[in-house]
Image 1 (tube, chains in turn cyan, red):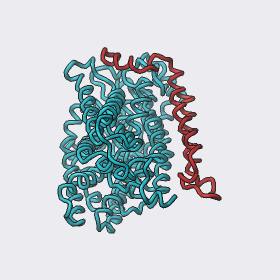
Image 2 (cartoon, chains in turn orange, cyan; image 1 turned 30 degrees about the vertical axis):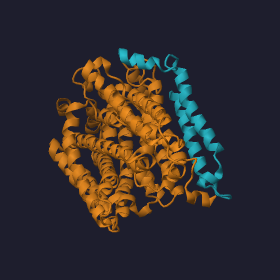
Image 3 (cartoon, rainbow over the protein chains, first blue to last red; image 1 turned 90 degrees about the vertical axis):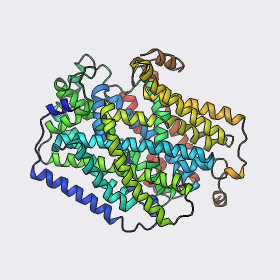
Image 4 (cartoon, each protein chain N blue to C red; image 1 turned 180 degrees about the vertical axis):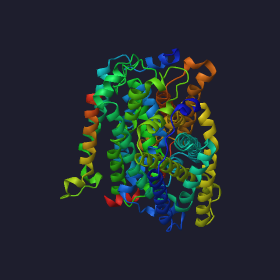
Length: 520
Length: 76
């Protein structure tokens, strides 16, 4: 990574750039500290006292999903594959967000849970709850590693900071307000970050497209290359190795997207922090509306890089190609003074908002799905204190893992998706079967989850045991692990006894909770 | 395309069809979602009578779906 990045001319930050960056950092930290004043209980820390406005939650949802890893990673993958990468924000986001808003969110709201594993524990058993909490926590710490790598790549390129210094500074900045303020501080700072992110990403696109000769000029330049025949298609042929349309539709649209937007603690926790069900639904819709912009803002930079700098960056199949270098090259070569400060602010926004979201959610899950189970009678203040210390611990763990991510994956986006596929299929299978039918049993869910995750590990591990030619697209891995989990859960449930109707009240959509019935 | 991947792919009945079918499949997903939303009772969505149109979450959702269908129609 360093060799290509080192070839890129390092831009000089002018006074105006530094003022903009420092102003942004001070604004975010001050806002985070201001909103940390009212945190007195674990409910304040983990669910913001259920007082968050829908528009702030909607913006927070956007930047919890989109961050520096997406800006760096998607630009690289768009350079390699083209606009097919927009599917991650269209069929992989807009569709599941709408499904979550109208079908699933009201259900979690009525169940009155803090976390998704908590719901699974009540619906199936405590083992399912603990294993999923463990998997989510591992995923979140892995994701922290990818975010730290993105931060280090940008800081190294733009400021000349070393890898570990960049990681350390980032961890301290996020740690200050996330440790003190909990979810409310996270959501408020996310809303500020969302605006900065949109402005910064828009500036890269506008300046880049103009320099590439407009959309027409960019299209013509890219079309003349002999390896870009599918770069302007969102639906790719069935023999495409990475993003064939059946794998995108089934793996991304039907499994990974819904599992992420319906079962992701970092997402659901925000909507549970709103004032009412209507506000929670509105926050999802606002997020979906904003997310219509992001495929353009994140994918077009990759195409700009391809049109303007393909001679420096090279072909993706050539040795030494580094997808993570596309975005730093755009930033260093295209942006004038002043604009550079805003774009740096956007990167910082993406880094901070992603990091604070994941550490806050990981802390919430560990306290509620592990610590409380083994220490049920401690004071609320004690749980609050444990949650804060866990934030510090997760930041340290993510920083340590960033070294592994930087050395074992070709792109941070790929690393994130591989971590995600490890359990998204089984998670969605258990959520769907658990909500839709009372016949899914505790042991059916347990074995469905276990064998689904085992299959995922085998499919991902095939390339390491059998060779690179056995590498399977992570989208197919997600789909087949979902199919496996559904099948096993149904088969085992057929031979085991389900819970009785009263035990499942409020947990299965056909058996409403008492308060729902009294409303009707 | 490796051997194992081909075996897995062969289990998907739609895999050997053309790109236009792919585009149609993506659009169909959104059309089905739009129909479900339109049929959903107002009571479930918490929509009251006399509510201004711009406060209708159902309408906003249908707008997002319309954009998505247009995107897959043109760039699919």
